Image 1 (tube, rainbow, N blue to C red):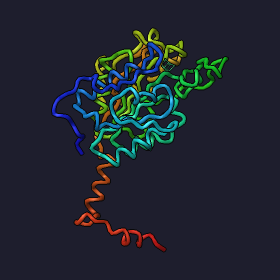
Image 2 (image 1 turned 135 degrees about the horizontal axis):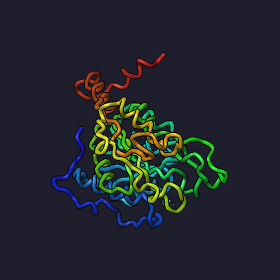
Image 3 (image 1 turned 90 degrees about the vertical axis):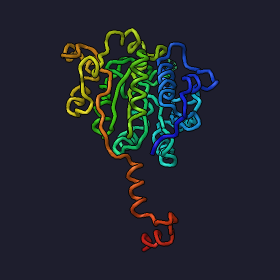
Image 4 (image 1 turned 45 degrees about the vertical axis):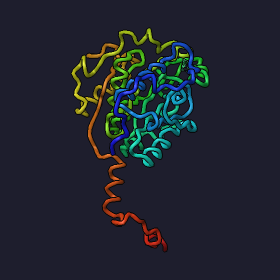
Length: 307
Ligand code: SF4
């Protein structure tokens, strides 16, 4: 179903609420707010017909700063809330804004299943590679050796490759971007919203307050655009998986010099394909089995399930 759209574009600032963000100055997540407002404006979306859902964490406050409907859910539960909103109103776009701890740990069970069912939802994860709101604990994407508040000797785990996992789970749009590159981020977020099906954008988003390793300074000169610089075709799943396996190589000293990355981390659209959405399959079922009058005979339906 087509989204509700305005006749004319609104300026991006019209998608901001009048609530001042409480994020720390210099937080990477500000870049995501800017990218979203630009994408909403370009897509001519109606602020009264956009749903944002979030869980818990610094990044999950994002819907408060936006002029759109928002559902601030329990920790890790932004995706199921998004699915409910999506099924209730398929004409309204649903964007989930979340953090790495929220989606890849607490709410991890929802991520692969929402992806494989291909709900038309956009998931934007602000990946600062640790839990910030609770003051610097390691998250699933924290690098090996990272010293969080509960890991004074360094993280003994390896980070989770979320790009590879998303592709393997059946996501039909998988990308990575960086909050320090506004143009790339805005274009990637807009492409994700335009995509029909489950779209996932992992945004490398520094937390200058706690994470003193994955900083804007660290990322400077260390990112490589796989589409523009390497000519990657996102329809090629095999190549996408190969590139995704380098998504964390910069953390691995043994692979630090591997071509073509040489210690750089890839950004861009890794994978993109077209597939029927869950909502389309529901509509097909309804058109096949619902009575022509549109009236559902619940007695008849329930009788099928009675012993
Ligand atoms: Fe951003 Fe970190 Fe401050 Fe949270 S603690 S608002 S992630 S800079």
